Length: 329
Image (cartoon, one colour):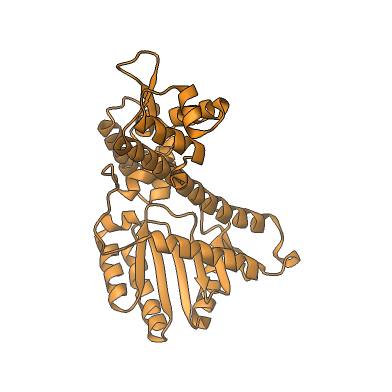
């Protein structure tokens, strides 16, 4: 009954028996449940690891079962921590997969591999994107990890946006949460939405990416310099993976007009991501690039988190965040 919360059948039976008969020891529990004493002791070890047993204040040297109200809360908190850890692993896998695709394409000549076209320099990239823009028929999906957009870039993009939307092309773009702090970018996004575009934001993105009609993708060969070169991918296997990546990120992103969501600890998604990056040992500059903010803003976010945790160092902040349940173990 409680297997979904990490409790096996025998451990659950022992827990229920200890709640109903707190005076009974191992032998009595074994007789009551018709189980070997060795299995009873193994179940007691499991219950202790899950913090469902505590030393008795009334009978020294004995254990007592915590109340179901406390016990179930502990099990659910543990499950939530495991889910959060899995989510972090998924996010790390997304970034690693996208970077691997880019690195692989950069190492191997395009002529030797069907489905991979090399673009060198900003001129080639712009020319290829212009061609794709003219040829797109149904949909454009974009990761835009650069933070706030420059006014001149916005003005240059508007005619292209109108041309695509006027042809009935569906446009979906994922920006970083940090664009919410850029008034002219927010104004542009609102304008784009009013014209029929769809925009959402997330704290961090694995790479810059444009997918056209689910048949062609353009990603940079270097995540730190998107102008250095890019690859155009048309392989069905790669496109399937990249489209799935986009849909996963899109489903977890927030519409630009939505109110900032806080988790159970009062943390924004950006603060959660900052904690995870700090825990992985990233510098302020690296965190700033992932979040699309200035290094000064990244330092401010980190400092605010340290103050809230009453920590004197980043290491201490990580330890206290883990103990407080802010980070998955």
